[in-house]
Length: 419
Image (cartoon, rainbow, N blue to C red; front, top):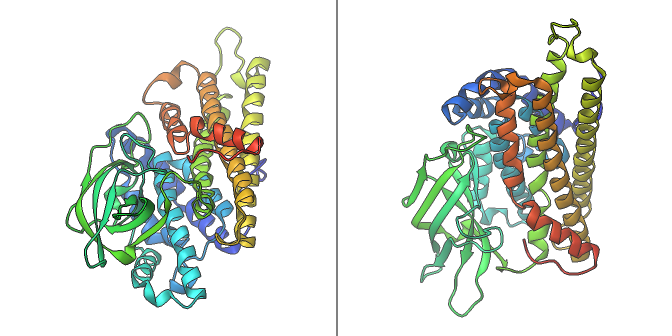
């Protein structure tokens, strides 16, 4: 079939290159997915292929040798394709690629203002990503707190102001086994000042960084989302970017948060699409002995499949529209020029999109499991892995119980709580 309804397809040349690279790797990734899931083993071979092929350099600046991909819509289209092959690889890829894209935006702003020489570490990291030598893991989640608002991990400035000493613990640090750089949330603590939210770029080989291989989860078992301990890690001050005081609703933080959902839900949709395709491909082969008719010939199964497809198409359309809106917003506004009220409206829309799409993806895979029959309940069946993997998406922040009050507050014209 040459037409795929509501297909997620790239809109830019850079996006097309990334998309084509992701599609080219789908077959080997799909072949490895079951083994990685069964053994709970990190998808290291897939990461090596992504680096060697240049796919992992897609969002690094073209001026530094990268692919120059700037569209989050196109990034989501490629992640969707990876999700159809291996959910663990899709999630891990998005963490690296989205972090690279945000750092590339920072680099571009510094270049435009003539201040890029003051951030040689950024040039080094982004050039390394473009060349396939650097991999970035995002370290946000922590036990006992909503770390996107209030990290317990502390960054204390040294007396001379040249470094921060960072200590804390991170969990769900996806792709950390392959990472050379951590993009970690921290809380900057200065005497006499309010604590500030910040991101810190931390090299994994620095003293005090401990990557813990303890990932043993229900699904996404190949994603390498283990714990990280940071014990008195000395980080150059230039690697830490303090922002607004913690627990505040601030424009630049909202601006950056708009990108968080696209790739996550695209990965979930890819998993749902894979489940749907499994059902569609096997229904003609399953026949009942009493009448010899296949499942594909039965009106009840046809109706169930129609319901499944309609929901999947709606979720794909909503994902694409939301990502296009974010891309258009980034084209028109910088963090400083964007009005807070506009940011709130768009943030509410992206969060509502995530809730709808993640719930729909879970429902689609659940319906596909039922249509598969009893064989799908066996752990060796591919749909059993998809059933478990797709359930990771609703756990990604912001979760529904955080997003829906935010959306409702904006609808009533009220200032939502930070989340």
